[in-house]
Amino acid sequence: MPMIRETIVSTMDDAGRVHLAPIGIIADDGGWIIAPFHPSTTLNNLRAVPFAAANFTDDVRIFAGCLTGRSQWPTAPCTEIRVPCLADALTHVELAVTRITEDELRPRFHCRALRSIAHAPFKGFNRAQAAVIEAAILVSRLGMLPRDKVEGEMACLQIAVRKTASAAEEEAWSWLRQAVAAFYEKSSPESSGGI
Ligand SMILES: Cc1cc2nc3c(=O)[nH]c(=O)nc-3n(C[C@H](O)[C@H](O)[C@H](O)COP(=O)(O)O)c2cc1C
Image (cartoon, rainbow, N blue to C red):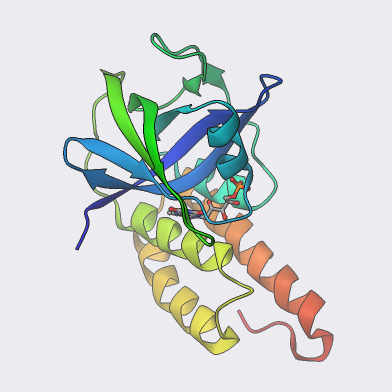
């Protein structure tokens, strides 16, 4: 099985507009693969400007925010590429696309790491952060997953949030809960209010 790191990937379009998206980058023989589903802005941007920054952050509000209409997070210049990195990344890696494995559903952009820069120390594991990441993945797949699975998993994940969250994780969790509630409210008004 491939090793995947959950990151915020920054990309840029032809006009210089920056896009941030939570993406699991796949370890690949010293480099990384970015595999965005079709259609997506990340995919279009990587075709237009074949560079990206993979941002390692413990601010899970950015993961939850990007999926819930809060995608404006501060960025800072990279050193080797014109795509910026996240200003608050603990570490960022500057990536250049070297080749593309085409696929109708999910092309794979093979990237070489040009530079990796550490900005701040890793502060240790936190269960609420892991729970928010898992919940963010559920939120990104609401249209594909059965409602009882989503609500069951959210209920389990909430235990770790209740026990271990700081204000940042609580805020991220509240955005995700609202997104789940709004999705089911919209899709079946008579049966809302599950979580
Ligand atoms: C932890 C995490 C990992 C994700 N990994 C991927 C991925 O590898 N590929 C992908 O297409 N979407 C992934 N997603 C979903 C995207 O973040 C989401 O669909 C996003 O909107 C991408 O589309 P965009 O580039 O148009 O913003 C992931 C979401 C989360 C929370």
